[in-house]
Image (cartoon, rainbow, N blue to C red; front, side):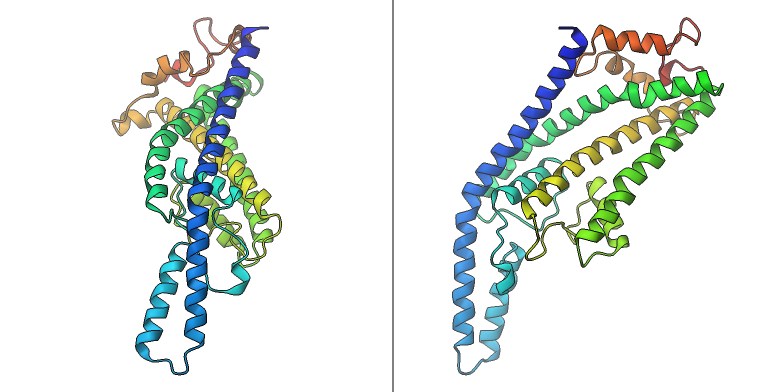
Length: 314
């Protein structure tokens, strides 16, 4: 088996291990938090029945009832009958929570109820956040040549563009594709699935999510009676991971383009030249086949050049 295939197999194993880490976290969160959630739901239901059975409601009892209901609502538990069937800590919801935790999106619509869950969240995020960044970096490094260096070289070869124009055209096309593929199209899908979301609400959700702001005012799959809720949650997780990966890719492409156009020097920012050794030694090592592709794409250029932003004359 060639080194190129071994490299892709290693990256695939890396991603599968990350998925296993999410599943393990979801299992632990569901085991810890679901019994606490069920007890809190039961207490709220008893409180509701006691309040309704009162012959005379005074201000003190009303305030006490509302205080406990609002406190339960903070943990995602409602007294409404149509929202009692769904759980915030079933396997799919726990997996969704674990994913938002390690990606630092953190919508805040669901939080651990128990002290054990809070302690485990600290430990889980302490390992999961850097691990997520590592997986995203490994994926982006493998995509840099086919998505960035290769297309720039093609623009120079086939369109006869100079380095500055080639990088600008490539970045504009890349940005357009990311906006369409990870903002506009998902917004159309979300606005169709979520009845209460407008297209603007969906665009807003996509932006807040992929920028890891995670305000939590819009969270998919929380509508009572949501069809295929588990599958929907998992699909949003996949969208989140791919979207973060593409955002990171766009940022790296913009940084290199800014370096080529002299913007980093103008604002006295670190140059991409400082990342040269990192690019030469990726986290998932590239095999001879990938190196051969890079050399082939750089043949029409000067002999000493390679398909990289760093090697284009400023």
